[in-house]
Image 1 (tube, one colour):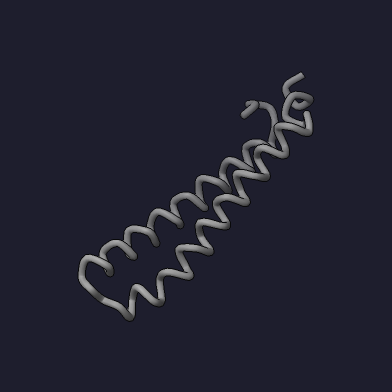
Image 2: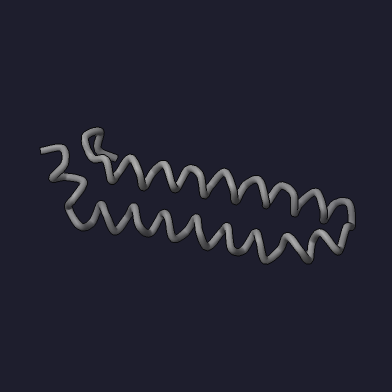
Length: 76
């Protein structure tokens, strides 16, 4: 991340938020599994997958931004 790039800051902030959301849901899924709460497991599983996909997409956007050279231009 480049300190002077607002887009870098925005993308990393979104990634951090997506990561927290994913970890929260993953924790809830683990607790449901340990508790043998099948209803919650069934409800949470697609939510965890969607959060995982959202986190992966946020990371892809960071990588794309870095490859595009926009991050380097902002610090120049």
